[in-house]
Amino acid sequence: MNKTLEYNNQKVWIASGAFNLEGNLTQPETPRGIILFAHGSSSSRNSPRNQYVAEELNKAGFSTLLFDLLTPDEEASDREDAKHRFNITFLAERLIGATQWVAQNLHIQNLKIGYFGASTGAAAALVAAAQFPDAVGAVVSRGGRPDLAQSSLANVQAPTLLIVGGKDSAIIEMNEQALAQLSGEKKLEIVPGASHLFEEPGALEEVAKMSRQWFEQYLVKS
Image (cartoon, rainbow, N blue to C red; front, top):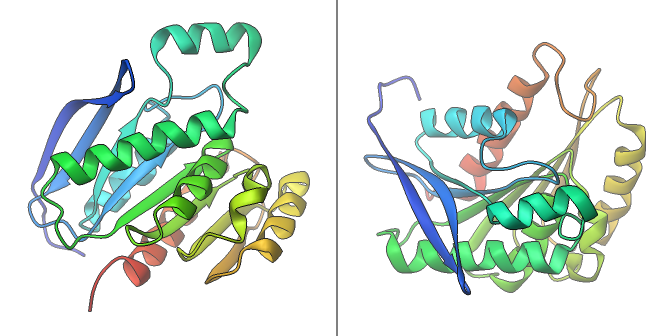
């Protein structure tokens, strides 16, 4: 989409049990869908890689919600004991809570929800997608660990795109194994020459392009 879009950017607080999680919500005037971002371990809503992808999706007319899966206190303790970063059930519950918040607080009506997950956040996205088959229309994983959602993979109905860097050999193998267990529409894309964080020139741009095309195909009604 080449036309200039107007965005509504706002800080939001998402209720999750006894806690409120901080998020950044960006909405074009007429959104084509809304994408919730689930960041990886040792990261947050301020991940520059996720922010870049979100900005590119905004340009394509999608609303985006980047939010912290952990409270500040949980983040601090996780840096010491890594208690939460690989607790996929815990992270998925936070994403499920954010999905419910979106449904209750935003005027999305017929808009489909998409998930974009990175690292362990990708596993959380797949677990959550398995629980919302009617609401979640597509999932994209960037350098993800979908293998950590093994018990949920067969129940994921949302079309799922797994994006992995060509230099990330261990993660490629994990994604190939997870791909075989996914039962719905699925695809594995390998970005040649890219490492785990897609820091090489043009690598993250390719991730954003693939993600946009996937969400346009599966979230936007004809």
